[in-house]
Image 1: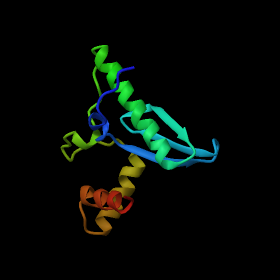
Image 2 (image 1 turned 90 degrees about the horizontal axis):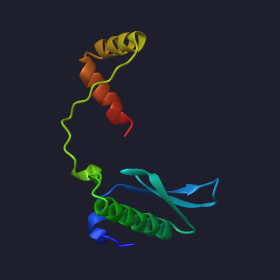
Image 3 (image 1 turned 90 degrees about the vertical axis):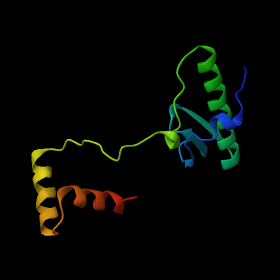
Length: 115
């Protein structure tokens, strides 16, 4: 299988965590949620999924299919719409008013507290 240059896939979003179920490290890539790699060490798991992503990107390109853009290179407007139930909307609006904030300011503050 032809492999793309590692640099082509180095900007993707990778994560390595311990899997209790598998008793190994599991590496994943956010842009390719169906791919994962298990290994005894974090480094081996990461290298395994990077190689797998590189092979997948090469296959997609060979088939003329679209390749996901890395999350780090995507443009974001800073806006998104969120639908919530009426009672949650009311509760958030009341909490925002109690803190003398707009609903938008209140939600942004709450979201940033969790990251």
